[in-house]
Image (tube, rainbow, N blue to C red; front, side):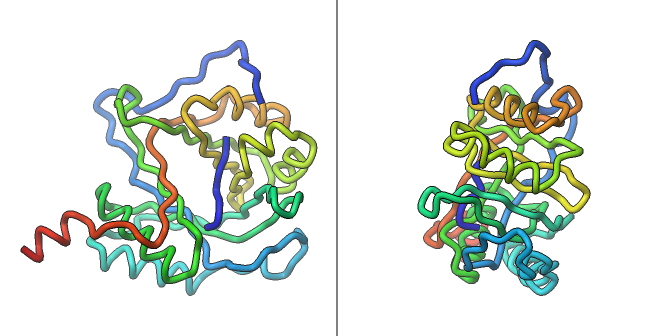
Length: 225
């Protein structure tokens, strides 16, 4: 996926819990990816109806080859702001929940990037809220459509610059990933779209845009020794 940045400046009066409760298991790491290489600017483009079934199967195979399994795959509608085109672009993508460690996650994302000719692939690993490695947040909000995300980006120059875009499930759940310091940005964006941040799921972790040159994962090096 070329870019999957998400992140306006406004602090709301309520508090949102973040992270994972002490002792609770962390969710599986996630890979956000697509096989799309075209620039799609028309939201009615028929290519945006692709369910990426073959792509799903191929990525599951890559995950398995790298020592993990895919526990869930979610079809997404992505909306992104292109500073080069000065307009929104669209693509179908998938979120893969996987059982991979840090290095094998990076290697898997690199392989996906190379095989499907992507500039980069986004990964997100959930971490305890107090982990020193936390550098990102993931926000899930029900009741927001891809059309709302598109219109929100078009109306708000600050959001376009700092958020970049977002992804929405077919059940109208927005998934926004941002730098951990940009939670106020996400709050304001969601609220301006009519979303309810008091009901949002906000979790901390670390993100990475992985290109095709990631190193071989440690588990492969160890097994080869």
